[in-house]
Image 1: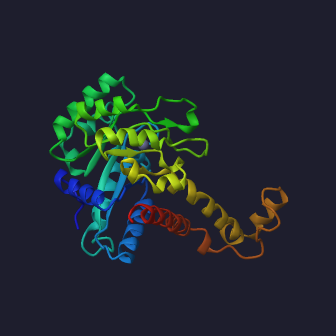
Image 2: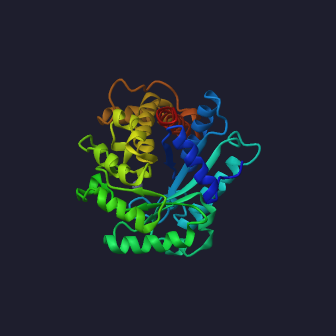
Image 3: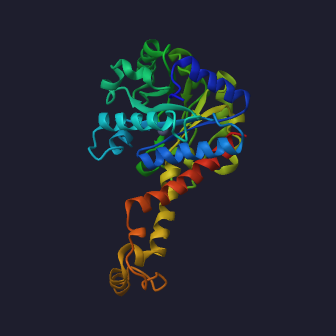
Length: 335
Ligand SMILES: [Zn+2]
């Protein structure tokens, strides 16, 4: 079916999800392999659980300096081209004849910057998306509220709006940003009129460390004031037992990306090592063994084979792992 857009249609799915105690995951993609892995996982889960029209959110960032995913979607490194390609991929993958045609696919624009994405925001095609995260969180709170409210007034009838009431930290930058307070979250929610808020609950973007603490107590305190309107970012840093309880904390949506890339890389790496002779040929394996780059267990007897040295092969490995990762999140949150 066509992409689910229009505020009412999107809102209906959120309402249905809340009634079922589901947390809606939004998986970001910055290449076609990820986009297809997300849809394939949703399709398989939907078929297995007797829900062929399973809702699924696919997201992308645009000019977000920390991770401009529309830029990465194309080797032209042009955000406009990348966003158009991403949207074209989603339209083709959801049209009749595609294996994913039964899914209810929503498209989310993530971390849309009040300044760097100005050209996009000035364009009325913003209404072509299902939801947008308007991110003015780098500004002082008053400015953030004022700009976010103006955006909500302009587009509230057309799409679901997620607002960034705080800045979410980034693990590699070593800069700690303040946690949300329930008072401030409530004020931001009420004064801006956004549908969902992203408070800083202690998680971090692109986190690889286990030293972070997701503050479920803070999430529940915010939930008490604004209802189940919390979107969690930085969830790749949250331990599994807490991920299982997100719905009870008032989290209705989780934006994910890091886990897909972080956890597929070791699998590709090992796969290439196991087929090193096929991937680079025995001579190269021998040279790397001699120089100490590779150990003795790495196979070096077989012949170079196209089976192991194509982009198709590497993307298939990544696709399979990403599909598993997405499937595991669906299993966790669509219960
Ligand atoms: Zn984020």
